Length: 404
Image (tube, rainbow, N blue to C red; front, side, top):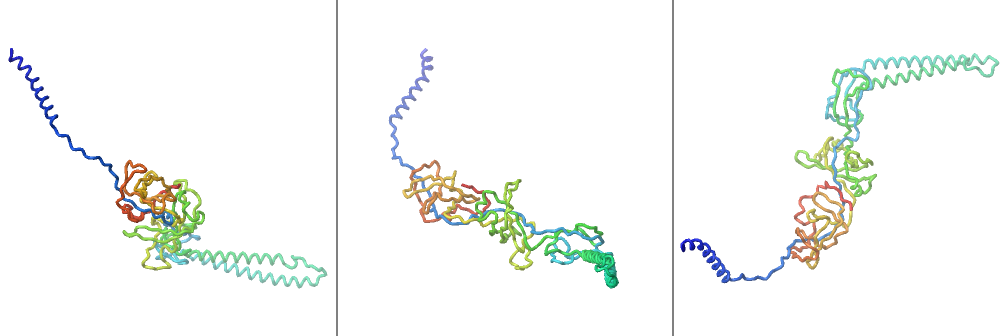
């Protein structure tokens, strides 16, 4: 009986022993050393604001096209008997240069017939003038004071004069048709394509090829409506533009001029197009070997010189959040200030009339910071925002405009 009672109470005895041991250990432990609590002050870097006067360059893009281009069309019919070596795709030709020739035999014969007809008409006119003089002398013996026109053969004279004019017109037409058998370049240009070959018969109005003018190149540059405010003049921009593209792994640039605005908003992309011109894109007048030809069809990016804006601050985009920047005053206290952003691009934010000379902007991202909070400044050099190493590469100016 005792054994059974002991076996049943044994777990209870073990539990009581553990409780007493725990109580003894807890009563004899040494409390931890208390240390004074300290407030953590954020450490920040700052840059000093330096307002600037700078132009707002607008960014765009476009394809290079000739200002003038024409379809070379035949004005007479016949067989092609000669084609110039320059009359090929990519051939450079000069104004008046012979490109092709049509068989002229029929038109030479027409010219000879017109010359003969004119000679006959002139002879008939001389004969009629003589008859008129005879008739005039015959009427002198009559008592009538005024001789009738028919008696003086005046209608016959007018008829022969009209025949001479007709013959002259026929001769001029025959001369033009004979001249049109030679197809000439209407201006200096480059052959886009050729559609005829030697021995081919062409009819009136046959398209022989296409010619691009090499004197002036045009580029249509789309910009948003909000960017027009940065142009000196909207209707007559007359401003410089820098065009660039990549050729053979190198960047090449050309200078052009914005000559006009198309004046309408494109219904497809809601853009307004400016038209830029580049003179002598194929270097036909200037053979400077250090300049590359601006070939038609090239895709170029454009930097348009815009209006100059004063009292402008340029900050890296990572320093502006929700149109606010973090300033540090002279007492090293935080000020969250809302700024007036007039423009942004890939790398920078442009702020006007919100920051003053000498203001300090924190370049350290602070979370859950409040106005008036104290910080510790570890970089307080008199540097401008352009010296910030977080700026990255220079702006490519491909950005949307944020209009205040």
